[in-house]
Length: 445
Image (spheres, rainbow, N blue to C red):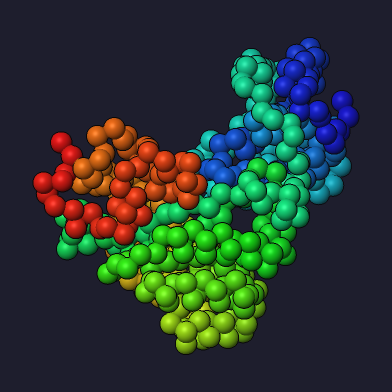
């Protein structure tokens, strides 16, 4: 068997099954390593996950007479010769190659892949599988045949994940999405007080997806997003007391765009507060420029936050020194599972940021909410929050008799008029009328 650089996605599962059966008819010992990229947390696997995995597995294939199969669900499978084992001086064995070359033993790959990708894995223990052949042939064949039975994924995606780099190629299909951030409080009936509304531009499949390429295109995407947000927000602004503050994502350079100045004027005219969320990566790339932009925004009465802070980023960086007004920590299922040393480091980092300044982002599950509350965090944004707010609206709205929880949730997160059609209380949906302002007699039965 020779090292393979690529297998056509439409054939890879069948070739994998055939290869397993063929190799297991020979006495040579082989191993198989399966990297389950399909088990990463969406929106992963991202292009860099695939490229890093392919590089490591292909290198092992070339060194150990192997072959790599890229499956339609995103998983990657390496089948190769078992590393030759050399006797040690004490009569035991280690996994160094007999020729003394410094080669990566295939048995080391699972642990290495888990270390690289566990931040995006809900269950790192299930990220890889290891099979010894021919002893575990049946288990590996069962895995491969199960992949054959799955729904065929589209083969049109760009393997490297770059996609079109022209805004016009995907502008008509970009979707403006909205989430409401809350402060957990005992001063309202529900305990959830809306404090900000976050707008985010979701790019369509096939658009540029590489994070570094998107940074390169930041000025163009900022300009496009600001125009869409300004149009949507301008139509929604009505005189109202205590409206939640508007949060938008922006690069450091985006703060100087004319489109941003226009949005500032729209918000001032409607008496709505404004805050900018700048990616941590962008701020760290040029701290001096970030500091100048931060001072200018604060002088204009605009809040400044750092977005995209992962548990790993919190461990290797010190976001607190950048002096933002708030910090958005991305929820990860790893957070409740940290070892004692990692947990101590996390607590110290959160304390340095100031728990009152931390927003737990991507709080899409009850587990995320409960963990954050246990750590002293009181500000949240995510799908689980959206569902809770939708439940409150349904209970308070006199027009909700024919609405489901999912419908109310989805209508509140989209700005597409067609998707919002069917709501009979847009002011309540958009937060213009707070839930607490609805009289008890208006609550649905």
